[in-house]
Amino acid sequence: MKTVIAVLGATCLSLAAQVASAADKPTDPQIAHIAYSAGVIDVEAAKLALSKTQNPAVKAFAESMQKDHTTVNEMALKLAKKLNVTPENNTTSQALTDAADEKRAELAKLDGVTFDKAYIASEIAYHKQVNDALATLLIPSAENGDLKRLLETGLKLFQGHQQHAEHVAADLK
Amino acid sequence: MTALLNRRQLLAAGATLLAGNSPTRAHDGTVHVVIEKLAFLPADIEVKAGQIIEWTNKDAFAHTATVKSSWEVLIPPKEVATHVAAAGDSVDYYCRFHPNMKGKITVLV
Ligand SMILES: [Cu+2]
Image (cartoon, rainbow over all chains, first blue to last red; front, side):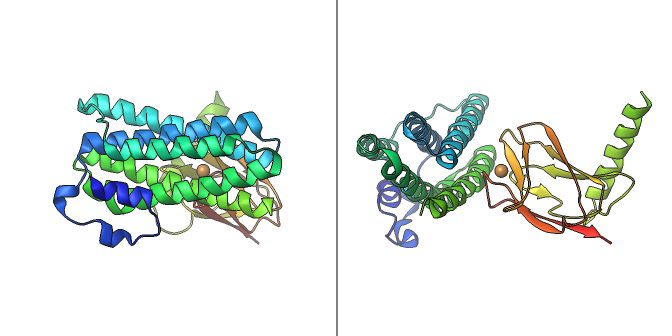
C-alpha cells in the first residue's frame, strides 16, 4: 500500500518505478474505497466552487463534477453491494482525503478570478493524479471483472473531466 | 399510431446500420448515434442536409454534441436529442463535458 500513497502523493515520480512488488497491490475492497474517496473529494471541491464562482464556465464545470462523480459513486456502491464487498478504509484513502482537506481550506480563502483559476488548476492536477493511479495501479490490481470495468469507465470519464478543465483553464487566461 | 410505428422502424433500421463498420449512411430521415460508455457510436456519420441526427444517450452522465463556435445539443442521461443537419454541417464535434468524446459529421452533396 505504500506504493499507492507514493503514486497518489507525488505525480512527478515515475509511476513505473513506483509499481513495485505484487505484495504492495491494493485489494479490491481497498481499491473500491480509494475510488469512492476520490469521488467524494471532487464533489466537495465542486460544492465549494459552486458557493464561490460567478463564472458560467467554471460553474458548468463544477456542476458537471458534482453530478458525474455522484453518479459514479452510486454505481460503485451498487456494485459493492452486489458483490458483497465492504469498501475498506486504508492509508491511501486517508492520505488523499487529508491532502484534499488542506487544498480545500487553501481554496476557501480565495475569491473571484483568483479562486476560479486556482480551483481549475487544482482540478487539472487532481484528475491527472487520479487518472495516473487508475491506469497504472488500481485498474491493473483489480481482481473482480465488474470492478475493473467500472474503474475503466471511471478512467474514461475522469480523462474527459481533465480535458474539460483544461479547456476552461485556457478560456480563463 | 402510424407515426409511432414508423419511428420504431426507423430505430430498427438505425440499429442495423450501426452494426456495420463503415460510416452510418443517410437513409430515409433520421441518422442515429448511440452514446455508450463515453463514446459516440458510430463516431463518423454521413447525412444529407435537412436530415435529422438523433443521439441516444445510454449513459448515466449528461453529454453534449458541441461544434466549437457554432451549435450545441445537450443530451441528458438516458435521453434522446436531435439536430437537423444543415448544408454547412460537415464538422468535427465533441462533448463539452468530456472532450475526449469525439464525432464527425459529413454532409453528402
Ligand atoms: Cu460527455
